[in-house]
Length: 459
Image (cartoon, rainbow, N blue to C red; front, side, top):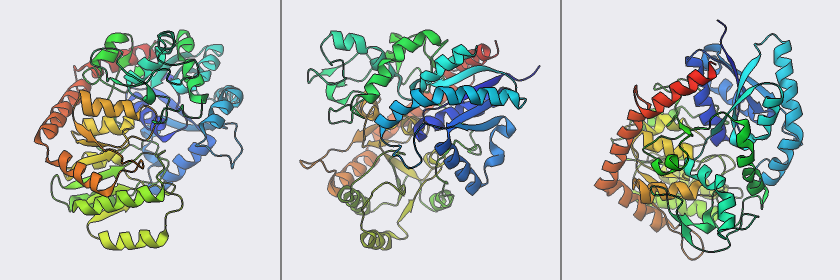
């Protein structure tokens, strides 16, 4: 019997592409054929990064086919401007997706039976239904953040927020026992300062999630029962299949937008066990030069070896002279790269702690490898994830800002020492790693949920 053909469509962002690529590899392992659809811009980045690392052949042994569609923006427009993105996608992309599906069939590819689509690309569910393709929505972030989004009508009714997503009352709330309690100024659609990201564009997008639920069969989450028991009690129909990963050997590419620096692992091999501070802030965070310098000098002050991921666009306007001097001072002690295989790094025996923006992929990768976290959230649901790490799981600590909004070098040094030196945090991180691995091992809850997903996709 021919393999079922599944379309996979992420929201165009590294943090959404990675877990859906991991899921795609798992589906290929179970006999499915996957067409992975990025925007043209992201597709070009992924292909270039694959070529740089020679990873093209590893895409599911031929089971994952890469495809692309235009995003509706001009070539030079700012794709970090969420207002522009969220406005362009539903207006331009549905027609392009329809044409791609027709072109795939015309080229002799099997007719797609399913769309596994990012919840943030809800417009695609309507395209799929129109073409007789069944829909499984995928949620790449904390299930608690989706629970809050789906409860928006009740939150408005209770007077916690208004219909534009702004907080009406400055207070802390908790949807259910076991879920984080956190302030109304840090909702999953906010920048952490109480302002909706992209003004109200993101809030308008996510407010449609409930309406689109009627087009979906089951919501799949990159999470696991023990991590978010409260959220899964609220929404027992959700299917947690995480923490997702492509393979234990780190051979399968996960759709990186930048080439992975392969020197990292050799450098880590030369470091003592539990000695290295790993620092990475994901694909979206931007630091101003002053904060960058405080962070750099804070890492220097720890006296520990460190591995720091600094994207080319991480700090516009940084003095090249200052950076050159910093590199000279830390040569041999610290390694700075533009991107790396984060899962491989976090699985390494040398890593002592992870200074993180608390994106959900990073959070799950830290959890799965038992690495204590030092939380430094940037925006959106990252503040919620910090609450999980600090207050619910208690597998890490958080940095604090001074009166100017800066995390000082002294603060970073102090918190790194606290996280690395806290035996109870280390032990809880280890126990939580064991729980995560039980869930994805044979007979575990995520393993059984994945079997349910495979059965559904085989219908």
